[in-house]
Length: 301
Image 1 (tube, one colour):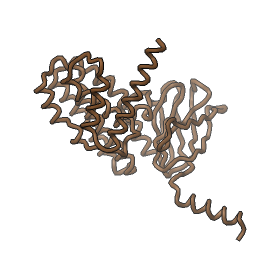
Image 2: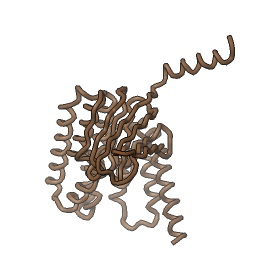
Image 3: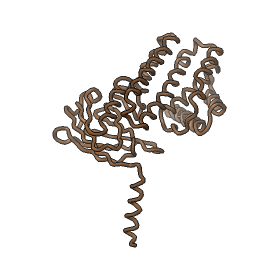
Image 4: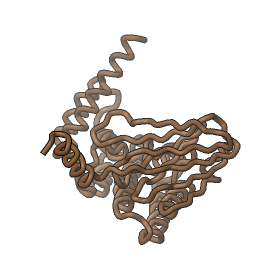
C-alpha cells in the first residue's frame, strides 16, 4: 500500500470521527453600514477568538463557508452590532438583515432557522441588544446594566423579587421552545443562567454593604453559598462562571475591614480556603494576573 493511500485513509478516518463541520452562511444585507460582515468564535483552550470576514458584493451579498465544531455559538458582527448564531448540522443557513438595525430585522432560512430565530428572540427579550454573546454570554451585558442600577435604587425585597421574576420568565421562554432546540444549547443556557443568577443575588449586598451587618451577611452566605451551585471546572473558560468566582470572593470579603491595603492577600486566603478543584487555581491565577496588571498600570501612570 502506498504512503499516499495510507495518508488518505488516515485523513478520512479523522474526518469521520471529528465533530467539525463546514457550514455555509449566505448573507444578504440591505442598507449595509460597512462593507463586510464578520464571524468569530473561540475554540476550547484558545485565548483569542478566530475572526473571519466576508466582503459584501453588489446587493449586499456574500457567502462564507467555514469549519466549526458541531454546536458552536458564533458571533456575528456588522458595523458594531453583535449577536450569536448557532452552527449546527444544517447548511446552508441564509441570513438577511438591515444593516442599520441587525437585531430587530434579522431573519433566517434553512434547517437551522428555528434555532437561530429562538436565539434572536431570546436576545431581544432577555439579552443585550447589540452586544456580544461571546463577550457577554447570552444576557449578562444587558442584565448587568439593568440590575446594577436596580441594586442601587431598590430595597432588598423588591430587588430579589424582580430578579426571581426575570429568571422565571426566562426559564418559561426556554421551556416553551426547548423541544425544538439542540440539547447542548439548552444546557449552555441553563448553566449560564444558574451562575448568572447567583452573581446578581450576591451583587446586592456588595453594592449596599454599608446597610449590612455581619449577621445579615452570614445569613445571605448560607442562602447563596457557592456550594449550592457546586463547582463546575468544565466552565472555567466561560466568562459568566469566571465572573461568579470573582464576585463570590468579593462577597466573602465583605465582613472584612474596609480600605485594607493588603486586600489581595485577604482575597488570596479566602479563595484558597473556600474554593475547590480547578476552580480554586483558576480564581487564584486570575487574581494574581489582575494584581500584576494594576501594579503595571500604576507604574506607567
